[in-house]
Length: 143
Image 1 (cartoon, rainbow, N blue to C red):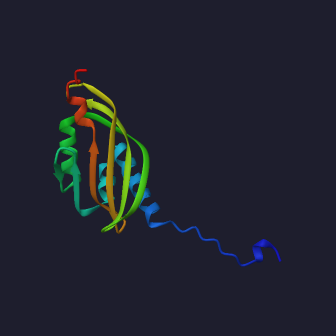
Image 2: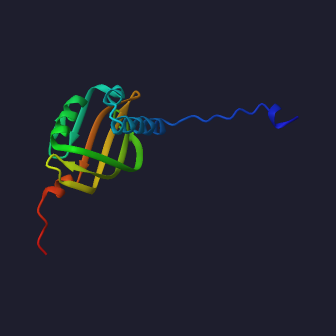
Image 3: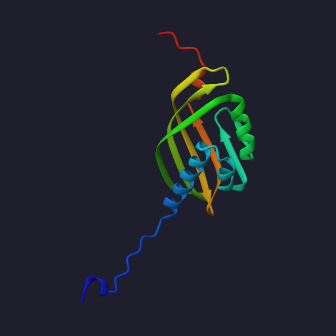
Protein backbone atom coordinates (compact mmCIF):
# COMPACT_ATOMS: atom_id res chain seq x y z
CA UNK A 1 0.00 0.00 0.00
CA UNK A 2 1.43 3.40 -0.96
CA UNK A 3 1.03 6.71 0.83
CA UNK A 4 -1.52 7.77 -1.80
CA UNK A 5 -3.67 4.77 -1.03
CA UNK A 6 -3.69 5.29 2.73
CA UNK A 7 -7.00 7.19 2.74
CA UNK A 8 -5.53 10.11 4.68
CA UNK A 9 -7.35 13.37 4.20
CA UNK A 10 -5.42 16.50 5.02
CA UNK A 11 -7.46 19.58 5.82
CA UNK A 12 -6.21 23.12 5.72
CA UNK A 13 -9.12 25.03 7.19
CA UNK A 14 -8.75 28.77 7.68
CA UNK A 15 -9.51 30.12 11.10
CA UNK A 16 -12.04 32.91 11.54
CA UNK A 17 -9.22 35.20 12.71
CA UNK A 18 -7.07 34.47 9.65
CA UNK A 19 -10.04 35.13 7.35
CA UNK A 20 -10.72 38.44 9.14
CA UNK A 21 -7.07 39.50 8.69
CA UNK A 22 -7.29 38.59 4.98
CA UNK A 23 -10.39 40.78 4.63
CA UNK A 24 -8.65 43.73 6.30
CA UNK A 25 -5.58 43.23 4.06
CA UNK A 26 -7.89 43.35 1.02
CA UNK A 27 -9.40 46.58 2.36
CA UNK A 28 -5.97 48.18 2.80
CA UNK A 29 -4.96 47.08 -0.71
CA UNK A 30 -8.11 48.62 -2.20
CA UNK A 31 -7.68 51.89 -0.28
CA UNK A 32 -4.00 52.22 -1.21
CA UNK A 33 -4.80 51.53 -4.87
CA UNK A 34 -7.50 54.21 -4.90
CA UNK A 35 -10.28 51.64 -5.35
CA UNK A 36 -12.74 53.14 -2.88
CA UNK A 37 -15.71 51.23 -4.32
CA UNK A 38 -13.89 47.95 -3.76
CA UNK A 39 -13.05 49.03 -0.20
CA UNK A 40 -16.68 50.01 0.42
CA UNK A 41 -17.86 46.60 -0.81
CA UNK A 42 -15.87 45.02 2.05
CA UNK A 43 -17.69 47.17 4.60
CA UNK A 44 -21.03 46.41 6.12
CA UNK A 45 -24.02 48.61 6.59
CA UNK A 46 -24.37 50.16 9.06
CA UNK A 47 -20.74 51.10 9.37
CA UNK A 48 -19.00 53.26 11.96
CA UNK A 49 -15.63 54.96 11.55
CA UNK A 50 -14.09 56.79 14.52
CA UNK A 51 -10.76 58.61 14.27
CA UNK A 52 -8.53 60.57 16.62
CA UNK A 53 -9.95 63.93 17.60
CA UNK A 54 -13.49 62.64 18.12
CA UNK A 55 -14.47 62.53 14.43
CA UNK A 56 -17.14 59.93 13.60
CA UNK A 57 -18.53 58.84 10.25
CA UNK A 58 -21.32 56.44 9.30
CA UNK A 59 -20.25 56.08 5.67
CA UNK A 60 -16.82 55.54 4.12
CA UNK A 61 -17.51 58.30 1.59
CA UNK A 62 -17.88 60.83 4.45
CA UNK A 63 -14.52 59.76 5.83
CA UNK A 64 -12.88 60.15 2.38
CA UNK A 65 -14.24 63.69 2.02
CA UNK A 66 -12.93 64.58 5.48
CA UNK A 67 -9.49 63.11 4.70
CA UNK A 68 -9.28 64.87 1.32
CA UNK A 69 -9.74 68.24 3.04
CA UNK A 70 -7.06 67.43 5.61
CA UNK A 71 -4.36 65.67 3.59
CA UNK A 72 -2.91 66.21 0.12
CA UNK A 73 -1.69 62.62 0.33
CA UNK A 74 -1.21 59.93 2.94
CA UNK A 75 0.33 56.46 2.91
CA UNK A 76 0.12 53.88 5.70
CA UNK A 77 2.90 51.34 6.11
CA UNK A 78 1.45 48.28 7.85
CA UNK A 79 3.91 46.58 10.17
CA UNK A 80 1.66 43.99 11.80
CA UNK A 81 -1.81 42.50 11.94
CA UNK A 82 -3.24 40.85 15.05
CA UNK A 83 -6.70 39.39 15.60
CA UNK A 84 -8.77 38.25 18.54
CA UNK A 85 -12.35 37.41 19.33
CA UNK A 86 -14.48 40.42 20.26
CA UNK A 87 -18.13 41.08 21.04
CA UNK A 88 -19.90 41.03 17.69
CA UNK A 89 -17.14 39.36 15.67
CA UNK A 90 -13.38 39.36 15.31
CA UNK A 91 -11.25 42.42 16.09
CA UNK A 92 -8.31 42.93 13.75
CA UNK A 93 -5.62 45.35 14.84
CA UNK A 94 -3.31 46.81 12.23
CA UNK A 95 -0.44 49.05 13.23
CA UNK A 96 2.47 50.80 11.64
CA UNK A 97 3.73 54.20 10.51
CA UNK A 98 2.31 56.72 8.08
CA UNK A 99 3.71 59.49 5.95
CA UNK A 100 2.26 62.10 3.67
CA UNK A 101 1.55 65.76 3.03
CA UNK A 102 -0.80 68.25 4.59
CA UNK A 103 -2.86 70.44 2.25
CA UNK A 104 -0.28 73.25 2.64
CA UNK A 105 2.45 70.95 1.30
CA UNK A 106 4.13 70.33 4.65
CA UNK A 107 5.33 66.74 4.85
CA UNK A 108 5.17 64.31 7.75
CA UNK A 109 6.66 60.87 8.19
CA UNK A 110 7.14 58.04 10.67
CA UNK A 111 3.86 58.83 12.48
CA UNK A 112 2.65 55.90 14.61
CA UNK A 113 -0.89 54.64 14.02
CA UNK A 114 -3.14 51.76 15.07
CA UNK A 115 -6.46 50.74 13.51
CA UNK A 116 -9.04 48.39 15.05
CA UNK A 117 -11.44 46.76 12.62
CA UNK A 118 -14.45 44.75 13.74
CA UNK A 119 -15.21 42.02 11.22
CA UNK A 120 -18.64 40.45 11.45
CA UNK A 121 -20.17 37.97 9.01
CA UNK A 122 -17.47 38.59 6.42
CA UNK A 123 -17.68 42.40 6.45
CA UNK A 124 -15.98 45.27 8.26
CA UNK A 125 -18.60 46.88 10.47
CA UNK A 126 -16.51 49.20 12.64
CA UNK A 127 -13.19 51.00 12.27
CA UNK A 128 -11.45 52.90 15.04
CA UNK A 129 -8.16 54.57 14.25
CA UNK A 130 -5.62 56.29 16.47
CA UNK A 131 -2.39 58.04 15.56
CA UNK A 132 0.19 60.54 16.68
CA UNK A 133 -0.63 62.77 13.67
CA UNK A 134 -1.58 65.71 15.90
CA UNK A 135 1.99 65.71 17.22
CA UNK A 136 3.25 66.68 13.75
CA UNK A 137 1.26 69.93 13.88
CA UNK A 138 2.47 71.03 17.32
CA UNK A 139 5.50 73.27 17.85
CA UNK A 140 8.52 71.41 19.25
CA UNK A 141 8.78 71.35 23.03
CA UNK A 142 11.56 73.42 24.58
CA UNK A 143 14.25 71.43 26.35
